[in-house]
Image (tube, rainbow, N blue to C red; front, side, top):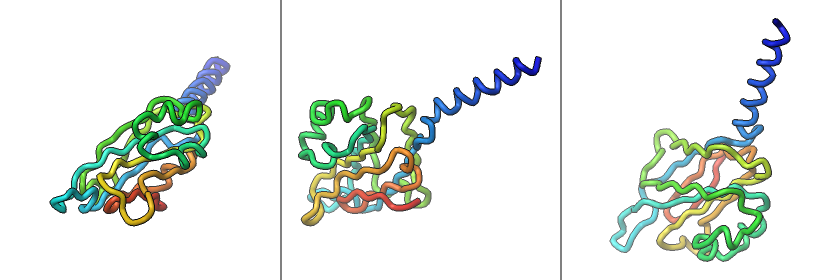
Length: 155
């Protein structure tokens, strides 16, 4: 009878590893200031952010933002694994405790997590509307939305 229990334990372990993405982050954490995405009346407004599982980050990092936002599948081709996950972040979300976003199962070929935020304007002279982190370490960071910028900070 031990053989049956031992086999059962091995199957459960394989199932758990398979569902957890073999070490890849299954969730990320988000924090937003009260002053995100200011409109013309200087009022903070919600921001849509998208999460992409990526096989390779090169095209994601260099593609023109608006084209990528409009049709990531066409721009990224085989580097995009699955569909983007879209979440709306409101001003002040996660300030006390970062908001957890469940990413769900990972594609076995995903190497990185790409994140984009659709702010109404660009802050300063640098476009900080997208960031990339290793798929295995995404849950070690907090995604911060501050003014019209997106950043990864160590959790």
